[in-house]
Image (cartoon, rainbow over all chains, first blue to last red):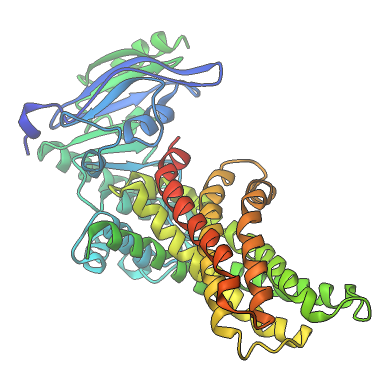
Amino acid sequence: MPSRDGEPLLAARGLRRSFGRVRVLRDVDLTLAAGDVLAVAGPNGAGKSTLLRVLAGLSRPSAGEVRVEGRRLAGDPEARRAIGLLSHHSLLYDDLTLLENLAFAARLYGSPHPAETARAALAAAGLSDRAGDQPRRLSRGLLQRAAIARALLHGPRVLLLDEPFTALDAAAAERLRATLAERREAGLGVLVVTHHLGEVWDVATRVAVMVGGRWAAEEPREGPLDAFLPRYREWIGA
Amino acid sequence: MPESLRLALAVAGKDIRAELRSRTALLSAVVFAALVLVVFNFARDPTAIAAADLAPSVLWVTFALAAMVALNRAFTVEREHGAIDGLLLAPVPRGALFLGKLLANLAFVGTVEAVTLPLFVLFFNVDLTAALPGIIGVTALATVGFVSVGTVFSAMAVRTRFAELMLPVLLLPFMVPPIIGAVQVTARLLAGRPLSEMLGWLRLLALYDVVFVTLCTMAFGAVVDE
């Protein structure tokens, strides 16, 4: 699927984010084109998760702007509709079942048949048999699968993932990699933040490194991971 | 049905469904209201002041305190698993989110008030037969105003470390005008006074509702967005 009017799916220019005197993002520029799977790595405290929150519109940048398919993200509900986010939290309510949680999310995204949309998302995540369970009854891995299902529920054109492989078993991790590959082939965009590049190396099209809130390096993903790791260590100063 | 109203009803429905399943806040608020009435009942000296003279103040202090307990839950449920991020990510106008939360909170506080009123009659032996429609009306009028403000402050307080303490500190000053108005109207209703004696207070309550529902709808986005 080509991006709207030839605009990149996601573009950030001059992003800065500070919390008091602490500068977490420093002039970050990035572009996510159709078919991109951009893997972002970096040490703890590099600003990766904050970057995802800013790109998702959950945190207002101190400077700079985010555009989704050419639309300014700030204050534009249609731009938000294009984004799916998997964060450190599942975004699910403990007092609702998985089906109710996902049906509620589907309603927020204007699905005409929220229950059917929710069932389809749960089936895709292999969670049909747990549809009536509340999140508090799920293991960490099952909860992560439910959170991924929620992020994918509305068919976002831009998918932002923060450590998506956390707690997934081998089969679920493979299913997620297949999903990312499908999105790449369909011309959709994915930005994956990870500490373990090996988990996404095969499906990524580009890899970037963040250090101290800066976009320290970015290059196409080529060759084996082992050949990239020495450069990565050099960039992060390890 | 307008899209914003449909989204607001979805948010309110979600809150009500979650609360009906856990019943945590509703039960806590009702028990709290009953305890406040018990304390007032035993703390007063019936020989010094008649129950009818004290009743309006006791009723509204009980409503206000119980509402505080109920309002505390409004955004604490959103804090679990970062669920509020799910709301804010969605293409939902902030005004619709506020309206949804307001409707859910009105349902909770209204339920608590509906349970508290018979307990109040029981403890204070007040005859509400003639005044009941008026009491229900003034309760609705006052509740819309302070629940509206409470919804915004609950969203604000939940981001702080001591949310349960912050909400009363923020909200109580804003509750004073509607509580004063509601006490004055309730006293006149219980005394069987004519409507003309209450009109000024009713206008104040209506004005408070219009002003604060409008302001809160406009301010909600700035409060919930980081």
